[in-house]
Length: 335
Image (cartoon, rainbow, N blue to C red):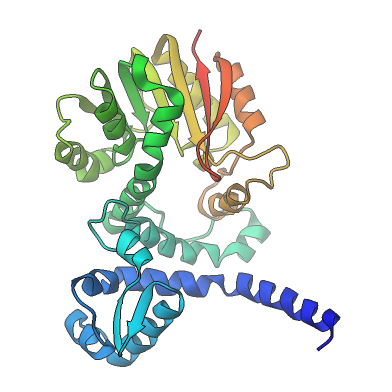
């Protein structure tokens, strides 16, 4: 085969990998939902035993276990499957860095993404249930946010210096992971988690109680687009909220944040902020598509755009902080 043909095959392989990316995602999500990784944490098993113990179809389990092994998520030896080190760390429920909830949420998103051609024609979000429409979907979504936040909360605490903070608002705080982490790091800090009543009552209160921080973390049940945030905060965290909104709503929300804060207080906006080319980081430009299929006006915004909106809301000293290849912070001060 000549060099030109090899290069052509390489380009085709790359394109094929993109076009079939959904397949690996579906196999992974099924493994999590059906308890395969949890089961194999107890002992290695062959497909017949796994199917019997999990109440699944033997032929289907045989095929999927081999596919999971091909993906590097399981190991096969002498006819028995066991979790790979990656699965052992991230896919067994109860592990410190468990990612199964966010994987479950991502699997539900597939139903919306396949409607992208219709979205392109109409400009309207995909039809079907939203991430918080029913209790099970809401649980995956909110606890999925916790899966992610556990990895970033301490990093954020490092780059913003929590030492001077005394009263914090975790806006749209979901499971309260940031409030819990920040209060654990700074014993002089109290926090308020603001979110919808069903989120607070079904998930957040339990997370806070389990962390033993019920006396230092309180709750406001409401809609951050409609209700008052409270007062006298010297730290307001707006984490992964702005991508669900359009510019007018973001500006309104930033104004509400400012009115809730004391002079000298800081607002921290964490999101998948883009460079001015709106292409990089690539995670952000792809995540914008998720907002396209899922919301009326959401998207991912550039650092420059958010900095302008913060300034127009009355904040100063706007600074960019990098926390991961995907996520960035903008920190601003209320004069």
